[in-house]
Image 1: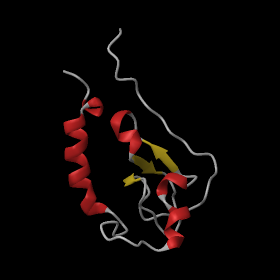
Image 2: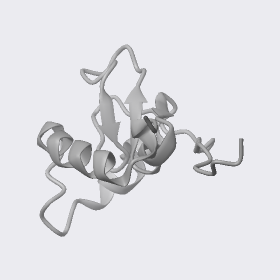
Image 3: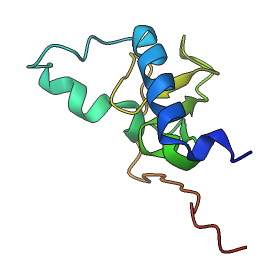
Length: 98
């Protein structure tokens, strides 16, 4: 069986399920400007997942955040955000050239 982290269908299913866990309401337009720099993807404690998930999701590793240990959407955020200019992005090759 192919690893599920490489499956577009599995990713879409997870995204649909995980939307209900967002801290911020990102479904409405016009989010406050201060949210731009406090997105999870720019936090020093955000660790991207692998495969297809690395494009949108990562784990919060900030012990002071109520979201520590949770999978977070990259555009979500919280009050314990610590800005980092070291943007981490990981990916897994989907080629089957083994």
